Length: 222
Ligand SMILES: Nc1nc2c(ncn2[C@@H]2O[C@H](COP(=O)(O)OP(=O)(O)OP(=O)(O)O)[C@@H](O)[C@H]2O)c(=O)[nH]1
Ligand SMILES: [Mg+2]
Image 1 (spheres, rainbow, N blue to C red):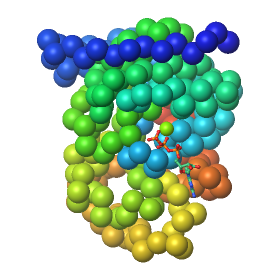
Image 2: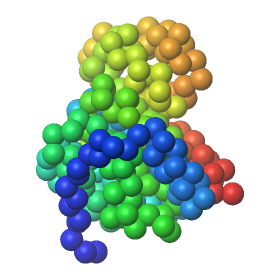
Image 3: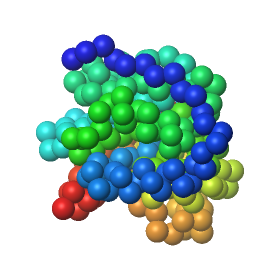
């Protein structure tokens, strides 16, 4: 594979992001590229879960990854080391991605021909929820050490995502995290949310999540 491409992002203040995101989504539907926008706090396990998910899906779908960070290429390098095409967006201080940035990432990746592209958004539960990236589905990860009260503090993130992956379940016995409390908050904020409980470290529950995603992509590609 070639060297990982590094794209310096410049945010366009002229574009209405919602309109641009809708246009991008329409294009992705026409081109049959399923884009997953993965969001979480820093360190909740986006890259670790991504590596596990890619291992489960890469035989079935041509898959690529757009990594986004304020700085560094650490995550893109991990993905590339696993044999998956990746590009790194350096947001230069922006704490989120918008649809124009994603468009630049897709162009760098050469998204035509990809069945499935993951975006690993900047680690943050606030700004990424406010900007539609044009993705087909929005997934957030909440890890057990962060606590079961996070839907109360970051309601927009929990209400805009289609899927919640609860990660680091191997740490449940070490924490006061209460699954019932969390499910109660979610049922009030976003009752249709799909929820998966996983440990990206031990692999527990990852198959259920990966199988569900595989089915979504299969339905989309028909
Ligand atoms: N115990 C445990 N540790 C995990 C699990 N998933 C990830 N980790 C660890 O959590 C740390 C952060 O994981 P990453 O995958 O880098 O998290 P991230 O969300 O990609 O982090 P940023 O990209 O920096 O926002 C690493 O030390 C992982 O090994 C898990 O299920 N259980
Ligand atoms: Mg990461």
